[in-house]
Structure formats: C-alpha cells, structure tokens
Length: 421
Image (cartoon, rainbow, N blue to C red):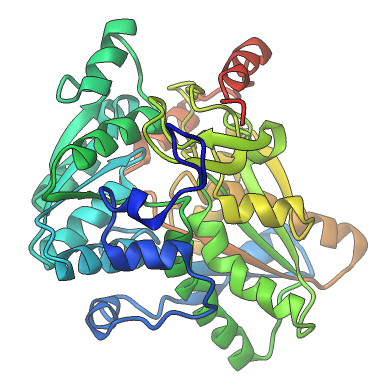
C-alpha cells in the first residue's frame, strides 16, 4: 500500500488510526498461518462448520454428468459469509480497548454481520449504507438496528465527505467508495473509533479462508477433488475465502482445479478494469492499493440488482489474476437470476443476488459437460441466502429487470481519475 498523501510505501503506524495493532500485523504479515483465537472459535461454533451440499436435483434438471457441489455460507446468523471476518475484527478491536467501530455496506450483508459481531463483544457500531440499497432494502437496515447499530444512508450530511458529495449531486444513489469515505473520515478523526472493512484487504481474505480449509476436509471425506472452483467477485472475500486454500493445494501439486471468478457485467472490475494503484474510496482518504479497478469515481447503475458493486478488486486476487492462476468472466444479471430460479426450484435455497453469478457460471460449465460427456466436479461458493433481497426477484419475475452495459464514456472518465503513480 501507498500513503494517500505522499504516495510513499505505507508504514504500519500509518494504519493505526483505522485498525487495531493485531489486524495491522495480519494485514502485513508474511506468515502462512495465523491461529484463530479461542473466543472467535467459540462464536464460529454458532454456525461453523457450514455444510457442503451436492446439488443433485440441479444436476438432474440440467441432465449433466458433472457433479455440482456448493459450500453454503447462508447458515450464519446474518445469512452470509461476512460473519467469518466480522467476528474476529470485532474481537480484536474489543481486545484492544476500542469502544466504537464504523463501516460501510452495500447490499447490507457486511453491515448486518458487523452489527451482529459488535453486539457480542460490547462495541458500538455505526454503518453507512449505500443510498440505493438503503432505500431498496429496509429490512437489512432493520436487521442492523435490531443488533444495535446506527445506520445512515450514504452519502449523508453526517460527514464532510458526505456533505461534499451531496452538494455535487443531491440525488446521488451512492456507492461503496462514497460510503467508505464517510466511515474512514469518522474513524480517522475520533481516537476511540476504528474502521472495519468487509472485503478487499489481506486480513479479511485471511479470515475468510476458513471456508476453503473446511471444504478441503469435507471433500476429502467423500473422496472428491474439484476440477473447477467458481465464485462471485465484488471485492473478493468470498472467492478468495473458498479458492485460496485450493490454490495452495494446486501450487503444491496435490490437485489441479481451474479457478473462475464471476463478476457482474454492470461492474466488471477484473474483465474491464486496469491494474493500477488506486484509492479504495471516492474521496481519496484510504491508502492506495495495487488492484484491478474501474476508478474510485465509478458509480454502478442503481438499478443493478446483483450486488458486487465495488470499483476495485482485492490486491491479492488482482495479483494471482495477473499471474494467470485464475480466470475471470462477467455475466449479465438476467442470466444470473434465471440461474437463481433454477437453483431455488431444485435445491430449495433462494440465493442472495451475489452468488447467482457463480450459479450461472456453474450451469454453463455443467451444460458444457453435458455436451462433451465430461464428468467434472464443479465446486461453487454459495455465500448467502436472498431472504432480504426478494425485491430483486420481484423485478425479475415481473419482467422489469434489464441487462446493463457500462457506458464506455463513463468508464473512460472514471479510469481517467486514477492517480498517476
């Protein structure tokens, strides 16, 4: 990372206003394994291990010789994989004597998870939720408030960054970059407050690898190894959490899966972005990270229903993508929701909008196996349920959902704002 003001390499002390010492150490560590604290394990036991399920009914519907497995993270209290990092982040902050944590949230899954974790460890939690999502998903907001969090629509008039954004566009739908600016501003200007992030950063992906580590053991117990590992990607925590342990095994020569990251056509960070140093937020308050980015000013269309709306990709995932260890593809939202209905009507689980991208890619893979006769083992990251996202399903079922293409002019403008480093 580089300092946002000087563009010089970041020192650990530069991160101290935002994160407790242990999370800074994890962010910068070169150690391969970090022990999970007992207190975190105790909370994980509320829902971990999560199930690995073979989608036999979906396989039958597709008529494919492939096996499709999904690692289902929707059994957590907040309904997604986000609790895997929310719990340790809350615990490390509480252990350091922090009283207040702030964050942003898009669809609301991360804000919900941090609200839940904060209440367990006696922290006050304040969340800036992207305005479009705040308006579309009132029950996510109520979920956070039920766990004791204070929730603001972003951009808000609570922060200087929010007031500037509203002055420029009073009807702004918001973006994760904007919401991050607001939360980071509050953390940086209040000594008793720290910032928590639900994706992108190294320590977040580290915490999420509990998914892949469990899945390795579960597949070994039934004697299968994956030929293809598929996950949706927004900031990268879900994909990295499942894929990285399998990637380690591939590099060690113990298995040989392909890795496929799937992103929305409306926010195609890996497939249309550039690999460059960019800010993690709109106002330029965060460190510069080397990542695939659409530009920190990029604002996804508010009618995009599929989540995964962040302008940048985790530096670790961007790095392994550049090394050629994985593939990336983008899929339009109507294909994703069509796949979601096939999944819901066979497997019974209504997926969150984000993993519908992985399901759509898995169905493509399974149908190709049907054509070739290959008996591949397909593993997907099923990162959460869609019980609070039914308005998106309503739009699809009514025929009101449309496919979106990012404007070339808009993308050129946002890419042009990337700092020259």
